Length: 87
Image (cartoon, rainbow, N blue to C red):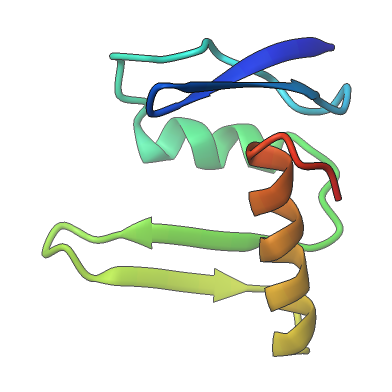
């Protein structure tokens, strides 16, 4: 699936895997956390990372990985994919 990802005023073209749903270049609609988490429950995920911000503005992090170095590598891979830089 070819798509464009808008980050600020820069538009990046990227090739997204078939299992990634691209919503729109920009969205003004907030997606409730329960909907995002519910969608994840429907997938056959082998490992997960959950990042969030609680009602008091504090960061929340949880994951199924035992190795924190692996978590950092995976976060970097997702960041690079989101920026259209590939893995």
